[in-house]
Length: 273
Image (cartoon, rainbow, N blue to C red; front, side, top):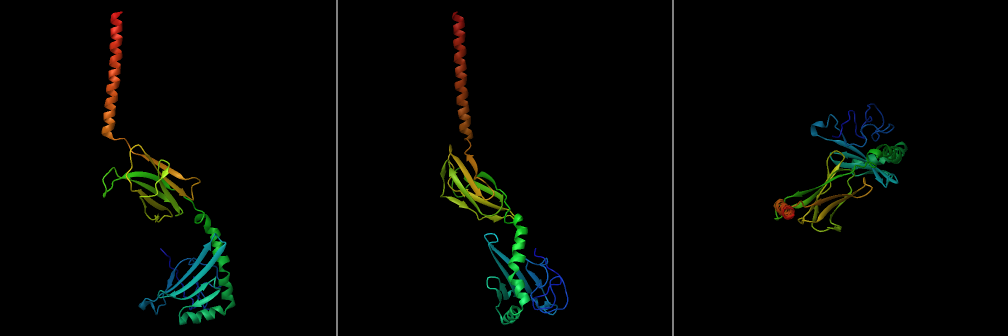
């Protein structure tokens, strides 16, 4: 849940995030270190506007390409779900999208203190926080757990279909392949989207639509950033119970006949001697 911060004021009002007081109307946070409201949407409703449910909103974004090789900082100002002004570090200045936003953008762009603060945010805000958060986000690796199960098919007769469950992995990019022996099965394979679990982990289900055949080995192979080598889980059709009992009975009969023949031969040889 996105936190709300008491004392927030929109960029065209007096005061700053987390602190009241008089001063020039500046973009939120000028002259202060980033407070607890950075990285979040926030809402502030002036008392005279609350009856009409008017909302000012602010959003700060850091966009990273190839680590911190290229960093883009974006700052958005929104009123009643309409963005009226924005700062983009790739552009280098504020841009207004409404007459109200254009007036404020022109005023902010003429203030050297504001512009210096915004243009350097890619370093003091984005790159700094990237180094702090990277071990828990970008560099985080959790290997998946892989299992194969035989699930019944409601549309086609037969022994069922093989389902490969790939669970609790991070990050999201992953590749799953089905093999029959050494041959990859690229057709008749259906997969879900990579689904977030809501706890910084993901899951994926991959179904092999062709029914498995007895005597063959099927493998579900997973490639993921947390694994040094592909992870493979194998599965074989278990023997048929009735057939297994019949073969056991035949084997027992043959073995019993053999012992009977050996015992009879031993008895006749002893009797003749």
